[in-house]
Length: 434
Image (tube, rainbow, N blue to C red; front, side, top):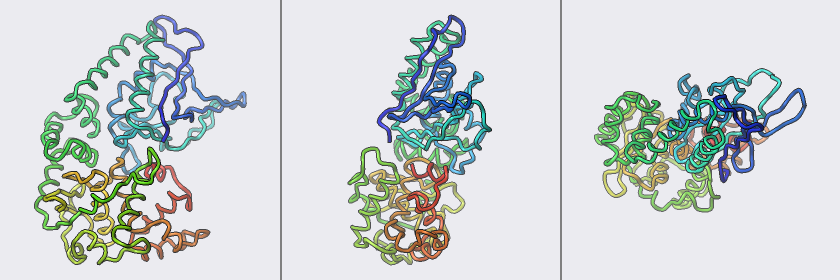
């Protein structure tokens, strides 16, 4: 992860009063520019594009809450509404805006190439960039600095007064603890400010003191929309009534940050956590058998195997702490291979949150859900062991065999190989692995 996020803007000519400004704008993370442009006619490259900094500032301020708090759709097929709020190319003004999307991972903000097809060759072409991420605080600082720069430099240009009012309103909202919590939930639900049904947001906020504010936001992103609070209440009731209990006390002995670099991705943290769990249970290598899997959670495999999939018809699974380390769990999976993976995610969630009272297990693209999935993958199918069971030169031919060996779905093996560079990594793989 880069150390800072910055939107640079310079004006070759001073913005004229009451006219739209024209600036040279560059976006960078650390020392890497995400706005590298190839000028086909002159055969030169540059780090910036030309456009209105006021227009860009308007777009950022207008969609700030959703940029900061709303993740990407887990299907990688975002709606038109989502794209208008998260893809820079949706900004107005006739500029060839960078083909980038900005969205939340939770405590981090992701900046990535858009998912749509490459545009046809034009006189100006943006150079390819990889998926990048920055801490939420650095993203906030970078946008704040950009707002101030634009307001100072374009004080008399067209729309400057309206921009100043909009930015002032945003600053006030962020400074109001209760209103900021409301805005974050609206964004997690997929709504613009003041567009979410009050009853839905209020219903979620009522559960925050019991479940935790972060847990409620995670539930909102797991099932966004106007039925989110009702869904959470149903999931909570089903989990409370579930006869299946596991012990996740092992989570307290694991520190995902141990031996990882600063700003490590959820994937890197998950690998560290999974290795520590394997060390604790005395299985450094090889598959985790069913009996050992049950023992890890202080239960019998037969109990896990025979448990009803009480969350099968619900939008997400969940765990709910009932005693010190004991958790009621509502699971969705019926297939036993998938069930092992899902239950491993429960342990991963307890590790990520340091044993919070409640944990949704969903398809969402938040850092928390990414950690769960990566933890389950690395716990059940460590990459170092996988390499010994794969023909690196012809990996596709041995994926199914390796999946059977480790007791996981073939997609687990395929994803691991892609994240580690053995198979070609797609943009979708990058979005999951960052």
